[in-house]
Image (tube, rainbow, N blue to C red; front, side, top):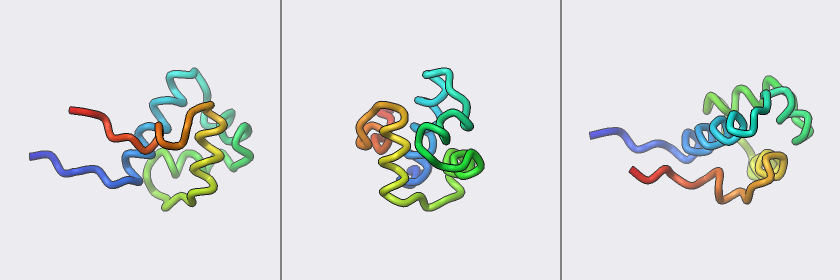
Length: 75
């Protein structure tokens, strides 16, 4: 049985997937969200407990509702 992902891991995976689908670099996403590029990288690796405000900024930069980044993939 596979271990359930944490909310942080779900957010990180969805963020990276959507960013890549849009052909954007971490640096470009960070610029759009007014965040530092190393911060975005650490969020994508689920190393940070990202604030709800920064989650909203990243979602807005990707042009998606925040809920999209929090949805678990259906298996």
